[in-house]
Image (spheres, rainbow, N blue to C red):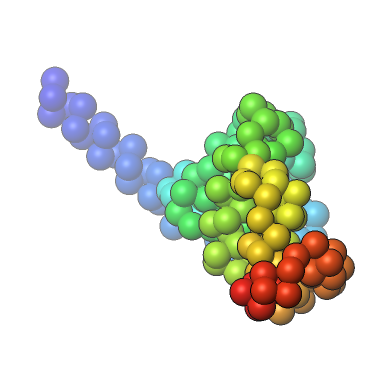
Length: 183
């Protein structure tokens, strides 16, 4: 009996691997970009099941938006979470947005800020700007204008067009010493 279970387990693993090897991530992502969500899912799902973080993020986006599938926040969170745990910065950002807004999960600004911080640390500009706002307004972290200024400056260097406004707002709230520290 144990032998049969091992053989069946091995065959299942081989079948999943074969599906993943026949799938094409670039084709799946390109299909998503042009709105061919059926092809996107067909190409990305086997790779997501096999643990590819970019494919997991793609499948998460499909479920988050209801593109080619029924919108399902729980499945979107599952796929974003899997990709985020592997360091996918955009998945970390989206997981933060879901958590901050309570989409499919209890609202939790502290947990959301944790994910924003991880994505921001990897250079994801939207996360940097959002993290700056969280420090500016005390969402999920203690209000800290010096940290807010630092993250707005990083986001500004990354090309966030609204970061300059945040820099100006925060600079008006802090002392010259704090501004020097932030810079």
